[in-house]
Every structure is written in structure tokens, then in C-alpha cells.
Image (cartoon, rainbow, N blue to C red; front, side, top):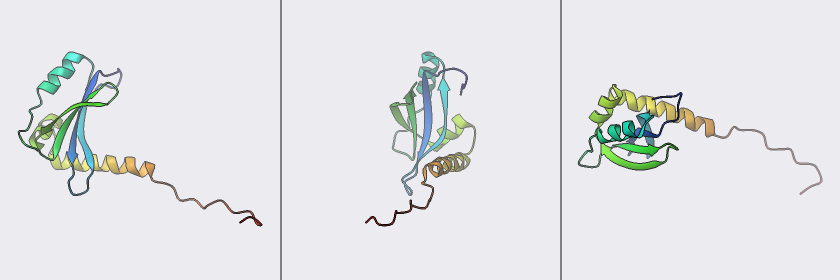
Length: 116
């Protein structure tokens, strides 16, 4: 994915973990031109049935504008790694992101005496 320039679109591959209800990103890419974006989306085969994997097509602001069911093998081919590794890495990133949002325990403010 290009980091230096604004992408016109993105494709995100996700694992829909049925046991935990989590949506785990297993990979993705960004595209600098509409032609690249269109070609990449067109080259991702749609799986004929629902699976645990989905490709999300996103616009420049990362809003999902389309999606399609894909196979684990498609994710592996596109990302160049075994699906178990992609899921483990995605789960670790999700856990780190969620940890950043967990409240930090702090003592409540002390009450002033004489107030109810």
C-alpha cells in the first residue's frame, strides 16, 4: 500500500469470527488511481456461498462502498501468507487497538466534607 500519497480507494480483507463476534482485518491494500482500484476489485473472485471471509471495497475516506464473500485461499494468495498467520496478526492488532480504548483505573475524586 502506498503511504506517501492519498489513495483513491482501498480493499480490506476481513475474517468474521463467528465464535467471538469480532471482525478481524487480515490484510488490505490502497490504490492511487481509479483504474488500479477498479482492476484490483475486479480481480478478486467472489465466493459463491457465505464464508468467514469478506473483501470490503472502501472509498478514499475508508467508507465501505461494496463487499463480497471470498475464500481463505483468496486471502492467502493476495496477502502471501497462511490464513492462520494472517488471522493471528490481525487479532493481535485488534487487541492492541482495543487496549488503547480501555479505561485506565483511577481513584475517584475525593468528596469534600459536609456535602451529601
